[in-house]
Amino acid sequence: MVDAASFKGRDIISMREFNREEIDLILSTATDMISLVDKGSDLLRGKILATLFFEPSTRTRLSFESSMHRLGGSVVGFAQPQTSSVAKGETLADTIKTVESYSDVIAMRHPSEDSSIVAAEAASIPVINGGSGSWEHPTQACLDLHTILTAKGTIDGLTIALVGDLLYGRTVHSLAVALRNYDVKAYFVSPDQLKMRDGVIADVKGKLDYEETSDLNSILPELDILYATRVQKERFKDHADYEKVKDAYLINKAFLEGAKPELRVMHPLPRITEIATDVDGTPHALYFGQVKHGIYTRMALIALVLGAL
Ligand code: NCD
Image 1: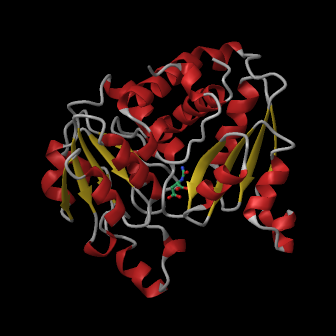
Image 2: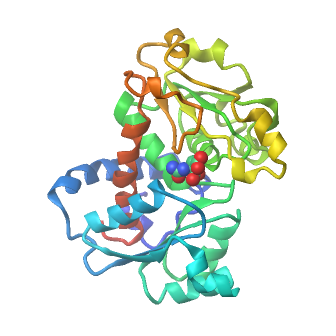
Image 3: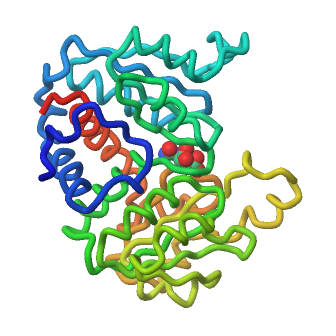
């Protein structure tokens, strides 16, 4: 049986590790956290979260830290690895074996794809993956699902397009894998050069009703959720290749006139040019509302893996 206690001590590395029952429990726990944001809580008093961010971040790191504070816990960590012993050549495993003496749970972002697996193997405390190269970003997928569920009252039955950089975007990898647990129609919309990563296709095939296309125009009228993403400039080996695809999809207010009035546009942020600012004031815009679900969801995940519920 899946209950809160079964999450105690678990790492959160990949959405591949979670079935529908477990995702439902994470999402219902996130909903329970909403009232604690205003009331405040001492649930994690005396507990320490370490945030180790080896790559740039605004939302993910700050929301992990804010979530821990909201639950009465404290935070240590770094956002600039060049100020830590990593700059002296320390291995990730050694950094983790040290940090676990200072904390009860680790949230980490790192450019290498296997970083969260390496960290989880080295650590005796739970490791939460806050983004591992282009591979996965599972806590973002959880907050994306919570956003959809709150906005639409359901995830099952929806038509959802993941749009943009499906090759390098870790958020869409985790979200696509998570969606295989739901009865949704998914579209993977990208330029040919940025088609959904093979490993994700392999893991959703036969479980998720999906279609790949480069034509956003023709499917727009069907969509309930349009999940836009940034082309991941930092992952391109050749800058000229980035230039060719960086403006593949430009979503603006005029373009959305072809959509259902109930269409909601999401984005993990930061946005570059994918969504024009004239969308911000329309009822379609959900991307800034999406951000606060990062708090509820990360409060839930930290409390669950610490066995506090
Ligand atoms: C994303 C990331 O870091 O993968 N941002 C986030 O965590 N909200 C998306 C991106 O950088 O494009």
